[in-house]
Length: 314
Image 1 (spheres, rainbow, N blue to C red):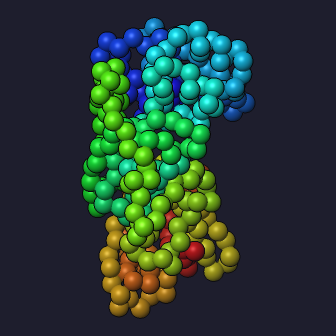
Image 2 (tube, rainbow, N blue to C red; image 1 turned 90 degrees about the horizontal axis):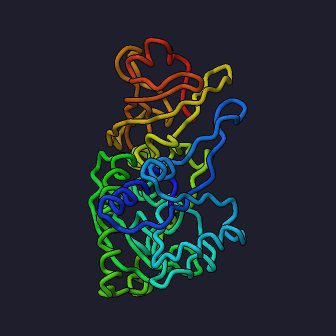
Image 3 (cartoon, one colour; image 1 turned 45 degrees about the vertical axis):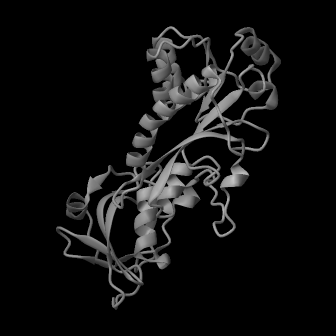
């Protein structure tokens, strides 16, 4: 059960490993195009159809017709990767249970966007977890985990791709352990520490992605990395006339300098090769950006078509 590319790698590993996959559950095709007249299948469906697998696409997971069709497949095990929250009638169906692959080191970052929030928060380590489903989301007993470092220049795409590949390995390892009866689990409560509060990973919306420059250079830098390339961090350019433009930031570097004298939000540029933003403790040097209605470009190309005189960021 899954939808995006992140789930395809696990499905691919199971197919190539010769496991008996009796069905694949994914989201209904998504309307695309100007009038929604074109239906776009999910990456999981595209892969499944291409390999002759049975595909189920329920609108509602409690729908009786779907539940009966799922039950008729007589699956011994269900695997969830980047999918919706399942009702008990679904996750409690197979004899070996249902496990989930989650892109964090649970119990940290329960929620919809664990990779983004780990990078946004400046973490130096993350990982993947397999765990059994239960009623409360992302709280079931842990089966296995794999840890990886987050490098200081990684954006969320780089971390996503590494976790996706490791996720395929961990799913296969977990399936084998379940089939062999060698699984041991750990309650998440045993991994909680009094001096380490739980950090959530809620769904990200457009409002979430606006950069708060007042939090300083390191926070702004991590924020940009944690939302690049999608959905992308953004800010507003404001000029002396009160005009506003939305600017997405895909790549940047930071320079710490507590002695900076420039007001926060000041744009510093030669209008040819570099564009920086002054912050309370340093600077953010912009490298890849996009004005609303324009294409993404590097800073040199941006400056060829945009004069920064009289503008600042908010």
